[in-house]
Image 1 (tube, rainbow, N blue to C red):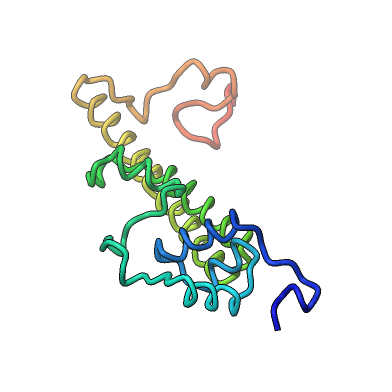
Image 2 (cartoon, rainbow, N blue to C red; image 1 turned 135 degrees about the horizontal axis):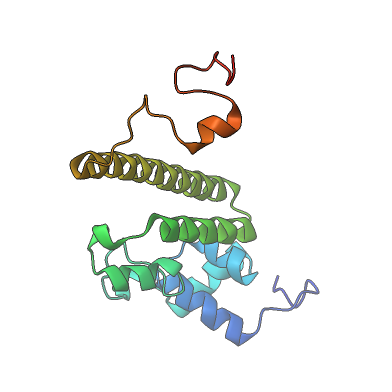
Length: 175
């Protein structure tokens, strides 16, 4: 029985054109249906009737990003030089992919991208801590080389104001 006979309208030709394009680009049939609001049986029937065959499409590498993915621009900009990739930007891309998965109703994929986003944030924070440690060590070494290293037993102007002498924390001024 056709969809018109059951009281439902078939999606317009523009929708089917987008479904066909996505299907032939390599999206799974269920994914095409979710994204474009068509039934899986309808898609498979139309694909068989109209000869939508992926085998007839030109070969493309499997790791190719979808043209709308945020990673496309990053990939072009860094030109396979991973040292030029900013972890914050990777976190942003993971966040956007997570949101897209949520919008599609794909909870498993959304959780995977969330985990990637959190990992990127952790790695970025660890790199920042390492950089701070490195800078602190470098600063101390430069001070020692310049002869400006503070003498831990020397008193400064604050000793008189806080009532603590350089001879120890338990001795008060005037005692």
